[in-house]
Length: 89
Image (cartoon, rainbow, N blue to C red; front, side, top):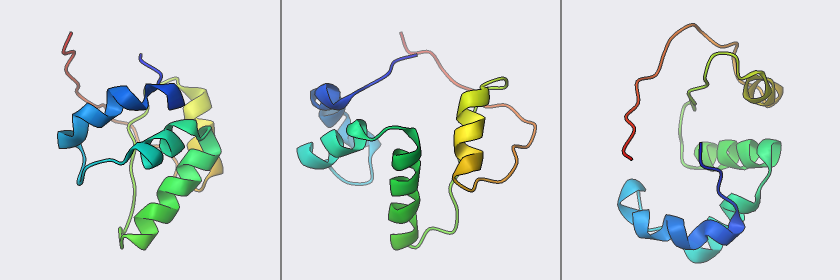
């Protein structure tokens, strides 16, 4: 799994086609600088401001740290399921 930090903004910006709008350098650095709870809280605030009715995130079974973080920020209890993904390497 790849973990990005603020110094990796230059790697994110070329992927502008993956976002709803072109990411700015300053916002990308800010986003990559936020640790766990602060990041989720900021994403929730952004989603509410944008009029979103909910948020979701896939979590691998057994990832207790991520589950605890999301529950601590008000997420509903996880439901059983799976997420399909593609490795592009």
